[in-house]
Amino acid sequence: MQRDIFQRTELLLGTHVLDRMATLRVILFGVGGVGSWCAESLVRSGIGHLTIVDCDCVNRSNINRQLVATVDTVGRAKVDVLKQRLLTINPDVHVEALERMFCEDTANSFNLDSYDYIIDAIDSLRDKALLIEMSCETNARFFSSMGAALKMDPTRISVAEFWKVKGDPLARALRVRFKREKRFPKRKFKCVYSDELLANKPIDNPVTEAPSPIHKPQTNGTVAHITAIFGFMLSGLVVQDAVQRFDVGEKTVNH
Image (cartoon, rainbow, N blue to C red; front, side, top):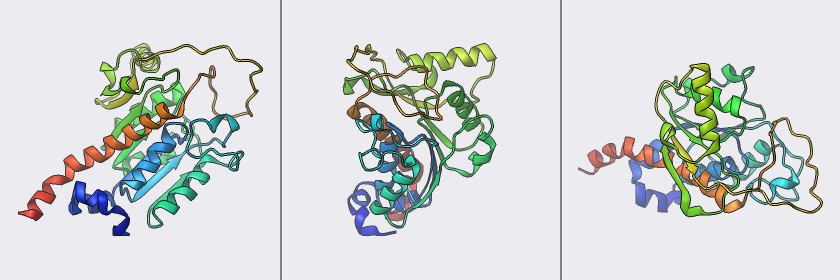
């Protein structure tokens, strides 16, 4: 580990925690508006092994809110752009970039049991439900992002246990799906969400987006500060959990 770049983190978390974080294995599904910022924060926090999963390429409509999206990266695979950036932050971090969709056909290929943390930042209701179910069957800590679109107020972003999330249509749809299918997550998990819900405004001459392998029922308005905060909060949950797990060791070392 290049310790000098993490000196400020080490001052806050302690040497023992920082060393342990460098050994953690994290897998992140979705590196768009939420996931891209989460990945950046994880690497800047000292996570040593990060797998990023996304099948999409950068689109011009991503530029307003996604870390990977610039006019120069349009058309490139998001995971490749993000990996390149993350290695410029910490050349020692191990980043595995998987240009792949998480779905029923591919789910078993990710070996979820091999990770310490699983982070969900995907949009598809069906695939998200499957990821939640499978992640909750592992021993990994699991955190999930609910919907970050149609929101403007950063003060209304919060964290709650999935079944206690209020005012979020995506969480509601997931709960309806679990109840209808009588298949429920086997344990509780925390979600980042906001109870704010605005409406799309009509725009003149809407631009048709390039085809994407990820099906979306409709296009909703989003802004960078909301998606970034969602991503940073997911990363913060990982760091906070790691501190709670490993800080006992730091106290033991100090005493």
